[in-house]
Length: 548
Image (tube, rainbow, N blue to C red; front, side):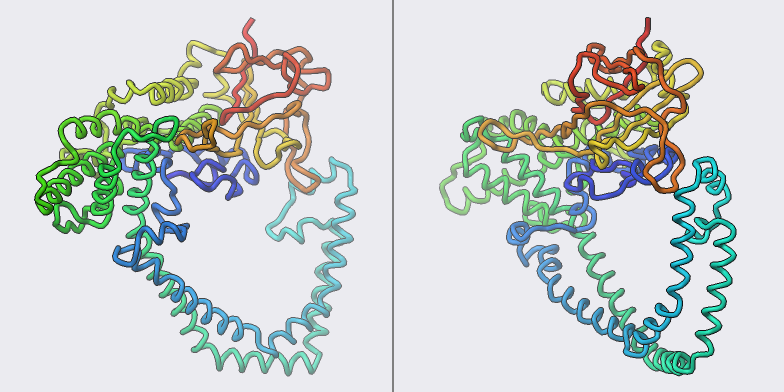
């Protein structure tokens, strides 16, 4: 659904866990990396980015507190509570396998190999030192002649010949060594003897891990969705100073109803597909179902205790269906909205044409009603009612603004490189090499400079340190952006940066904020036109050349 290689730092709960193509792959890899962030046969990107994907899709990362909440009476609880003994069993079998693969004979053979062949590496290091000291033109020439063997490819021709000759000589000497030959025969006999046991162990480990993984994946989604719904509900009912707009007894019914549905139970009946259906529902539709189940439990309780009193009366139901549900949607999608905007910023700056269908703006999955086609998901009209919420409207307005940058290039030629421009990656930003990435895009008419912020998201807290459910991009600052030509590092990578120095005094303007201006200084670097640092407080800073 979301390509981790591309969206480095934006998956919920996994900021900077992956290398990402902007760190280690050619810039052209971006061309097709983001064209399927959402599609007609995919789950809505906002819905999923609001959740923790490791938990939702793979059942990875459940904390002890979560395990306590979902006890052994639940389907996933049975699996998760059995995990430790299963893992311990797998670990013991892996130790046996390691013992098989590290017998005394094998260890001795490897040691002798290493001693005998060490001369080869000395030759390699001599050749590599020569290469690093060679003129830049010579290095670039050798780079064009690279072969598949990385070590071999570094060496100049004389060292290559010496490398091959020395390797062949050492191997021949090794073959004459009687002790080595005896060891080799012992190893062959040992391998033949233990092969059936080793194979059986390997298969057993794979079977156990596959079984555990399959069960967890199948059962994790409904519980992750249920926990997210309850977390959002608890944020939604709180007032600024801790008071709650819903009585505790109503909240207890809401929690019981959510737990029932997550376990596949509704109105005291078991439904085999209910769990997965609930997991993939849009948050508002899932909450509708929770309210109905809570009303059923309320009616059942009043009948059982004989009081006839209903906790969820008409007034409370109206509050849950409107005020609470509206705020719940806001809290539920806080992290997802920030993540989707990051994707849109990336898509606007880099090459490619992301495909986004109706639905992701509102966390709709296509499973909102019985009349929808579950295969193609929701391609109907959007729900304008959500725009009544100020935070949702602000998000949607920004979404449209960023999403339309490429389309606007027809009326704003200064943005044309976003559509048909060549793409160059700039040198690593020394102040933030793991978080910020510079990109230069140009065509025959003009150019665009971009800084991608891959530092991830952080939750906004109020003045008392309480969570708000809203997220923002981690802010990064740099003194200047180096546009000069150079290598990624002292290694053998192709040059990065702008081939020719940009004219001093050239002004660049933020495509989304015309008051945010930057200028090229005497050294050819980009600096803040007003002085001070360049502040990157959004997923990407996109700058076009000033139109005069």
